[in-house]
Length: 88
Image (tube, rainbow, N blue to C red; front, top):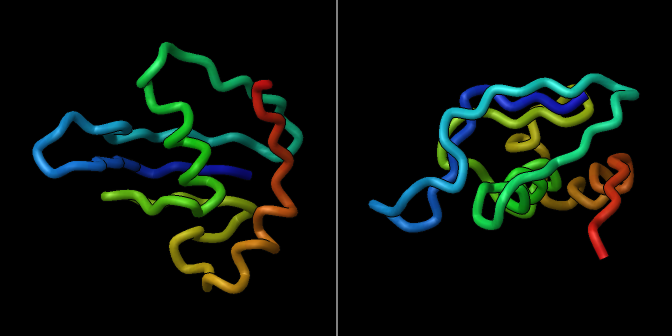
C-alpha cells in the first residue's frame, strides 16, 4: 500500500510546488501508471515513495509504514520491496 496524506513538495522557497496537497491511496496488488506532462511532479512522486526526497508537508506511507520515520539504514530494504518499472 502507498498512501499520500496532504503531501506537498517545494524545492525552492517561494517557487511553485512540485506537488501541492496530494491525497492518494494505492492498494496492494494494484497496477498503476503515473503519467503527466513534463514538470507535473511524476519524478517527485516516485522519489518521495522511495525516500530519495522528503515532503515539505504531509505524510508518505509505503508498505504500511510512514516513510519519513524509516531510518536511513533501512531505506534500501524498503526500496527492494517496492516494484518500480522506469521508462527507458
